[in-house]
Length: 322
Ligand code: NAP
Ligand code: MG
Image 1 (cartoon, rainbow, N blue to C red):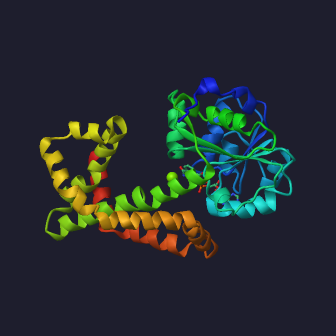
Image 2: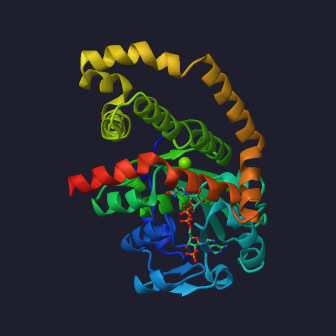
Image 3: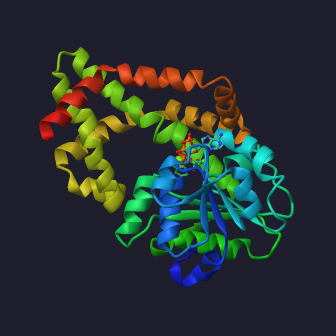
């Protein structure tokens, strides 16, 4: 796979553009700050509440004003709000040949947004949370990003995507080409079946098994929760085989006994089912429905997570460390 770095990107391109960042949340704020520090001078933020971006030195406009002014509008409001904002506030105002950028492929891939054909449409998806995107940038490194082009009406959509990614700092780490389809489907699959879906459930199940058997919640927490950071750091730094070298033979032997009994053939069958659902657009549809109803399912799962006994233990242990 071709990987692009700073030397493959023309930073002057995005610096010459009028850039509007829509949303000032997890991604919007760090992206706007990184763009400004990379010398993008014609830069505004558009969103609902403008207090924070204003306090941090940005001009704040409405999404329609941003669309009429910008050469490049970057969609960094929640995925489930993007289609309506695009239809009502951006599409009527975006100038012909301007560019629309996304940080996640969902809305384009599942056709919730079908952009005007004269627009350039590209994806720059940093592979991690916004806090880390900003932190890495300030440490003179960067976060790996995926890029893709869905529409290239001007002939320079890819060059602008690379330039934008470089302005986020990703050219220091690596910029990898993908497609909207691949990014959207792989990202949603991982969110549902691996990272945010499965790992917390595994942690709950382990914690509950130990505490139900009479182990102290503190010991159960250290074993099943705190050590997640150790394994994540080791895998990140050395890969899975390398991680095994850094743990004791005892831990390694235990892993070989237990791993395949927890993640079984049934688990893999279920993963393939989840992937089919993701690819059919079912997950995206359910998200949109939940948002339209005022997020009943998201609210319920947040309340359930907050009430789990594991949180009180975690709170006590975090206080001990201070
Ligand atoms: P977020 O933090 O939830 O976005 C919040 C921002 O969007 C706030 O500024 C909010 O304004 C504004 N907003 C919300 N609803 C709006 C509406 N209807 N009209 C106008 N502005 C609205 O979103 P996010 O997590 O950064 O995600 C943004 C995009 O980045 C998504 O496509 C996501 O998939 C992608 N992405 C996110 C991450 C991540 O780290 N979270 C990583 C990679 C990619 P108020 O403050 O006024 O509510
Ligand atoms: Mg993701």
